[in-house]
Amino acid sequence: MSNILGETMLELREMREEIISLREELHAVKKRLRDEEDEERGQRSLGRLPSDGELDMDGFVEEEAEQSSGKRSRKRDFDRISKEVEKWASNILFEEERTGNGWKEISCNNMMRKKFNRDGRTQVYLKWMSDSRDEQDRESGISDKNSLDYPCIKCYATIDAPMETVCSFLSNEETIPIYNELVVDHDDIEEITPHSKITWTKMPKVLFVKSRDFVTFCSHRWWRDGTQVIVNQACEHDDRPGVMVEGQGDATRGFALRGANFISKDPNDPDKTRISILAHANPGGGLPQWAMNTAVNGVVQIEPFKLFHKINEGACNYQHQSSASSQTAHVNSLPGRSAKPAGIAQLGYTCFWPNGGGLKELPFSSHPKQSWDDDEEEDNDEDAYNEDE
Image 1 (cartoon, helix red, strand yellow):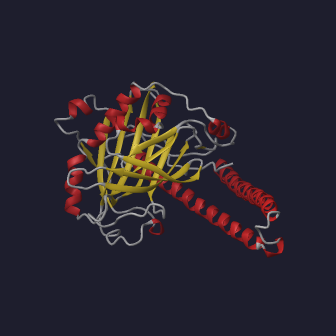
Image 2 (cartoon, one colour; image 1 turned 30 degrees about the vertical axis):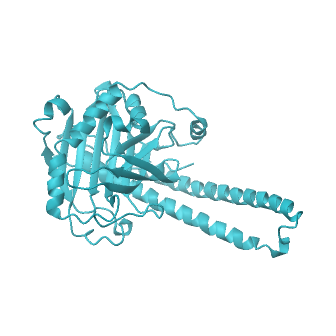
Image 3 (cartoon, helix red, strand yellow; image 1 turned 90 degrees about the horizontal axis):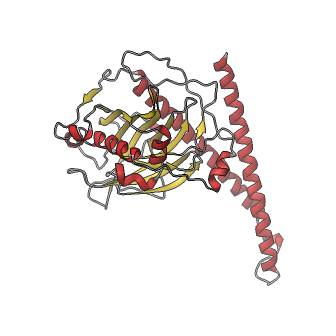
């Protein structure tokens, strides 16, 4: 009964969202028309504009309506992607056995273990798999998109700092150099909603793999138990076309195919935080399978462990900073949204919401619980989303 009620409430919220969105767009169009009419009156008095009869306002309104409809359709597509990626990642991270279904545990490099994983705070697993995105969401013109397997890494780590501090630290883009050396440049391309955006990120040369850049959709929300969820999926954007062939530009386009970050309180210690990460990537450039294998084997025993080691050090030394602003006040006034900061810089994407904006899960919805013990069984319930209000 609770699931039926949840689905009904979700449908009502979606209908309400569409109505509110349309109403806001109509108000915006009317205001713009009034402003332009006022400006036209002033300019007409100077003899600079034609008369009202010569203006095609109907065509203008139709064009605005078409653009608004396209934006709503695009937003629904990205909402679908967010839900699909979260469900996919939750199943792999919390429902499957950690070393089952082809996953191989990776040990930290012997020479780096004492520095990066002395106390075993981080566990890393690797599996090679094909692109798991829907065919409609994949890039056009990629000849090997259906024929190769790409590396997918899942990690589990404990951070010796409270979740509030960890989230504040990771949501501050100025802290990127503290924990992630694989981001040399980044930018937001487009905001889709207050909780989602499309980003651009550039990474340096790693071993023999030359510099790569990525265009990635990112979204975040909060589970009702307080877990922060950030999902990502590779996408295309007209404002950032990529170089697909190795050596023909400053950076070759890579793809953060799919991924997710789950940040939650440690149930055994309120002063610690648990982070679970899933990352599936295609380095692009037409690298053959043997080259990808060599590159991955060269970094997987070091980089994930280094990442969490530096996040731990950075978060433990971080002085919590308030990011209150007018935007925060606006977010706080939106039902169903959180003002808590969110964000992270990973290989292939950087996304930050220091003033919040993430959706809060419906109080009666359910989702897969985090399982940190291999023999612990959890319910695999359908996740539910609280849409924009």
